[in-house]
Length: 93
Image 1 (cartoon, one colour):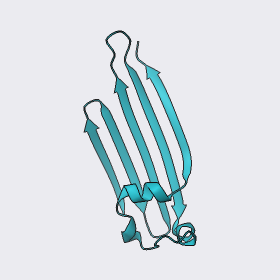
Image 2 (cartoon, one colour; image 1 turned 30 degrees about the vertical axis):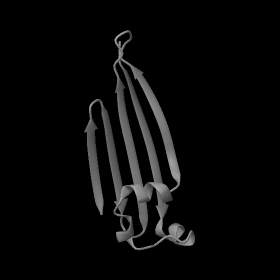
Image 3 (tube, helix red, strand yellow; image 1 turned 60 degrees about the horizontal axis):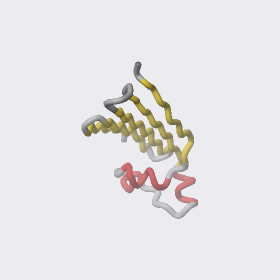
């Protein structure tokens, strides 16, 4: 299963990409937030978080191994270890 969700809320964008194939579970989460202040230049923040794990590792922790149990990305987010977390800041002149 592979899905991508893009949600736009005013000036914040959230991108979620998750993959569940019965062997490996992967979550790629990117959030972009734009701050517009009257007294300063706009600031764009991009936060990326990668989580990944095998069904074997989840099973060892007592979690279900059926891929249908992980259709909700918020459940995946709670159970997978973080592989990479990065925040970037861009100030627009």
